[in-house]
Image 1 (spheres, rainbow, N blue to C red):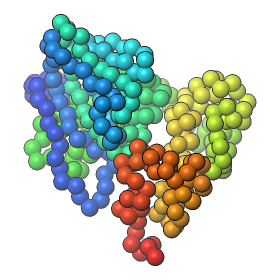
Image 2: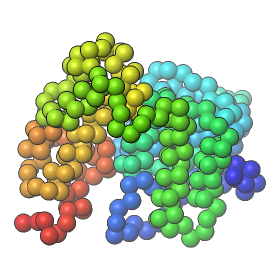
Image 3: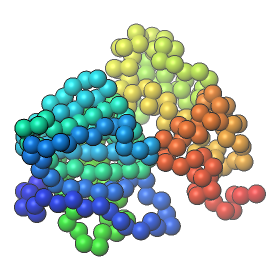
Image 4: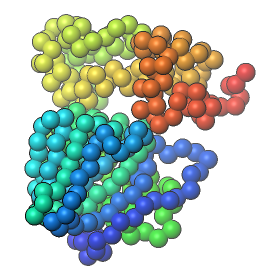
Length: 291
């Protein structure tokens, strides 16, 4: 499929599929295959708006540069860059050099959830096998080369892209379902049972009887996400359940789920889901449950 994408030629496509009555939480918004030659090319991760989205960009030739929270990377052929926005990152082309790559822009909470797990575990730059690169190229080609692309087809391509990243990051980190070392099982049980309580990394490390650094590494390797993201998503899962199943106020839900106040919860919720808690309740609640 990589050969097919290259044969298709340089192209950029924005997805304008109409929004249907059912939300799709992993969606492609654009994709492309491009070459940059001796030009000003620079993207700042804090200057691309407040709405969360994801960039996947695979280098085919030349090289680019990435600054990810102060850590520098040289992006060379065979490497795949994974970034979520907004974030303190910047990627650019040095004058006099060239960079050829294909890319996808995705949004939706599932796309972001998987991307954050990949970045937390493997970092923002992956080196994947040829079959996985082919899968990623196929997802890109499905967007740039399909006429009359529907919302479902765009979402399918987006899922194909992020699940390819998943396999690239976690193929060698598979843990039997439901099986965790006892120390980490204590932590996940404590989190699930105490979501309303303060749960910082030092406290969780003490529960696991590990140093903080060793705990974060062991948890991330065994569970597949960093403990901070596990905690955040566990809290958000409870938030969404309470929004849909109760008439509790946002302030009350914040207290029940470990957020300092309703305003802080609302900001975190919008970053995660792209809408406010109230909008989420209105858009997703079964009318039979209202009143």
